[in-house]
Length: 516
Image: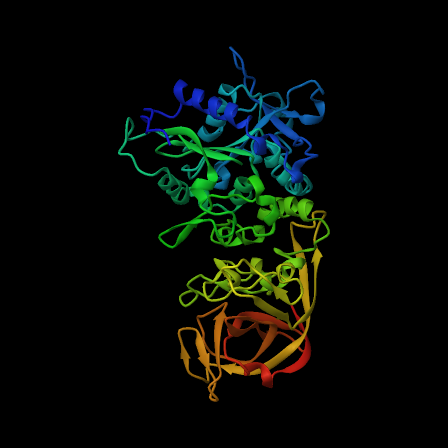
């Protein structure tokens, strides 16, 4: 890596605009970046774009309909990822202002003005901003455009990320308090600025980051670049293969740990990642904030649609893929529910991680439990690389899952969902037996490791342990759901369990349950 270069005194300077253009030119030589991803091969233009009127005498931005643009027109566009902040202060296009915005858009926030300026400086004519290009008071238009969100970001020339702006007043060009040649540190540390920035906590920004082919991040300290091949920094401008930064090939486990939090340096569609398209790091997404919990599924609908185009034939079940159902069901709540009882989304089935309003983790990524997918298991046996022993997995449960979709977009929202499980079960009373660090021991010496979704209360009577799979990784382990009766014929999820004790499940009985 080349020696460090001085940081500019301000972000919006000729040197930085030249640098961004240089990064774009280099990216156009990357084999991976020049290839259109499979999920975006037939990517139509967004319905509306903002014409920024570049040139020696730029005019006022205005909305244009992409259908009105001629075939010979260069329709390349940039997209903006930003924090809305207080909703009433965000410039929006409404049904009453649509005609006005097609003539001229005035009253832009600083972030929007800066995005217009960067778009002009790199020689691109069109810009896409969600609040201006989607009618914010038209439910039909909103639903239609949200269903195409994966194509909007995947089809953009590149995305501008207002990483450190809490709202529209912050802008892309934030005044700098320090510049020049800084004390050199490893550039990987610069990704911590993205983790700490307001945009990295926004739920909607997760799929925007995953889907965009090229991103320019504007932080308080410096400008950062990433494409599907490389990363670069204002003070380390030479592009570096992102594999050297991420340190791994699986996007779900290649995050860098900073104080117990992960920074995802790999993205879903980077390079050869398309082989692992279902291994999205939903754990990172679950820790992000949403203004409306009802947006839990819509905020990832574009990403789910992109994955669906890749895998083909698999069924999407409110955040879980049917082909990976067992691992998808074995999730753990991470929020401190001992203090506050967590909220659950009423319209999403309890067995889906998207029903839980808070951070989650999957048992498959917990250090002391390895759970291969059904495909990886090839039925009952999975042979991993030579450094691991053979893993034998038996899928005990017969499961039929379904969800009822609301609206036109099959990925955006659900009205209900059920699991019909035929498996080995047993009823227990949690709280009547010794409890220590999530390890629950029966009188006869049988032990379970249990993870309750709500740990504000450790006492539950009449719960059902329903086995999902039994396997061995050096020692015998069994995994399953903890359920509680909702109504006469249905159950809902309250947690998961696993046990490493042999013979524990011998006393279980075979039954069929319906989980909602």
